[in-house]
Amino acid sequence: MHPDEFIRNFADAVEDIEPGSLSLDTNFRELENWSSIAALMTLAMIYSEYSVQITGNELETCKTLGDLFTTINSKVLEKA
Image 1: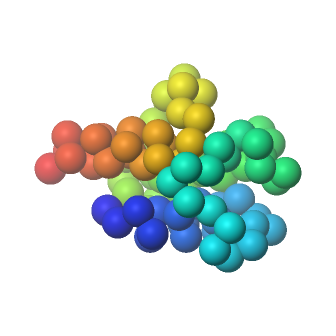
Image 2 (image 1 turned 45 degrees about the horizontal axis):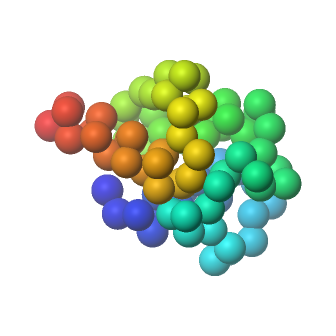
């Protein structure tokens, strides 16, 4: 999994984000469009794109996109 691909997928899941405005250091909870619906869309994107599930609690512990990327990547590697 490549970080740029993950960021693009995240931006697609959470609508109305300007392309290029996100990085692994972005605190996604501070995004104007972050909501409970965005969280559900993010969880669905993770399952759809990476075939792993993360729990709401795991999502809650992530603060930045880098944290989320690391969580997802570790689950992908566990499956391999």
